[in-house]
Length: 111
Image (cartoon, rainbow, N blue to C red):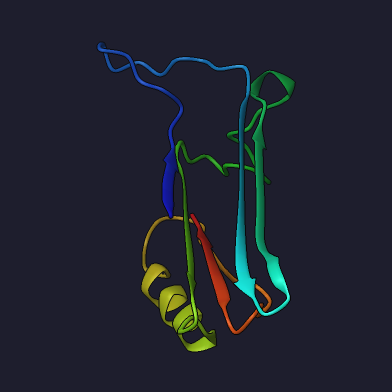
């Protein structure tokens, strides 16, 4: 699953304000013991409560991209390869692996 969060757009090219953005994603994996939670990603952005573009949040960038991959072939070498591929761009990017559940691992890339 992939998504990109943007500050908004109008026909004249200006950004528009928003009060709140709330995204919640759950990924469950079926196993021998039933469904188990693999990923719980909760993103909450509230611009009126503080500067979300500054240090510790968007770091001066206007867009936020997320990629979630769930597959039995996900492993540390894939995470390392994605980290190396994204290192040369003008962005702050993080790559994380989930715990392994029912033989399946997840990877989260956020930039």
